[in-house]
Length: 359
Image 1 (cartoon, rainbow, N blue to C red):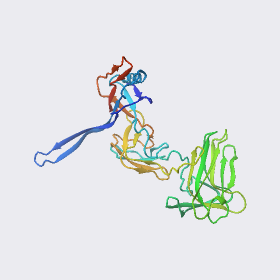
Image 2 (image 1 turned 60 degrees about the vertical axis):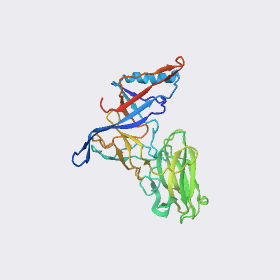
Image 3 (image 1 turned 60 degrees about the horizontal axis):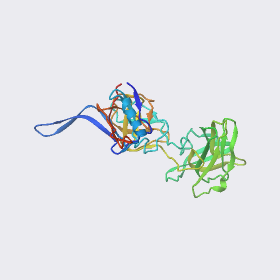
Image 4 (image 1 turned 135 degrees about the vertical axis):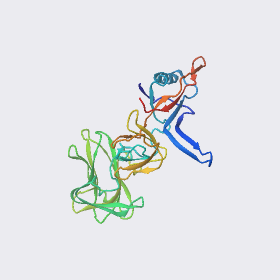
């Protein structure tokens, strides 16, 4: 048995899609007419792959080679839903199970659930230990944030350094650091970006007190290019420059690749209909999210899934969201195609597939 991965460039046409085959026994009472449904076996996902009409010889060759490599029902196709290869929700990162999922579980608990573009952790909680306070303090929940919640924090640096977060970066890449700020009782505040690898400033402490006020939230941002030998930086929404204490009220920090500050990512989410794969290889659990879910700031998320797990799955098992794979075998015993226009185009190629978890 060989596992064949669905080719990235395989085009599919109208009629292709996903489904589910159930194995339920329905019994009806001959006296009361009441019905009972009993599950005889775990349901299996199905997939239909149908070629677009009028394939060119080159495109038809890709289809024909795939069909041949499957060897009927002997080999297995590792495939994903081509219509939904990533979640509609914002979950990215590298999630894992944070607790064992027992056999028959209809929900899982994951850790490491973060929105993709924001590289910072706890972007709304500067009092969290993810933010280092060096000669600095953070007072939590002192003001109403831009989202209407009482979650903005007051930051203050009393002498050199300030409030910052460490982050691994790619040498030579361009990043943008942004955050929302208002004035606090202090009359000075600065930002800073520091090369922690080489102990040097990338962006020296720079005052932005004149750019903010006591009333309105202002989104500050600074774009920088990582030095060639730098692999770790510190980003400071509140840094000390000189003189007396420096401080501000802040909320919603974001570090992202690119030259501009884009919409604040918020927390990771999964939405109804998103796909997940728990584990790897044949025997992994391919499932659908059946209830919208949001992670907390620690990156923890509880997700309702269907179908229930077939077996116990250990804590720390990886959960895939990017092209999660389902393993399938061809249900038919025969495949065929037709040539038209003297072989210039091909039609009739299709695969009717059923999930397998046996090698």
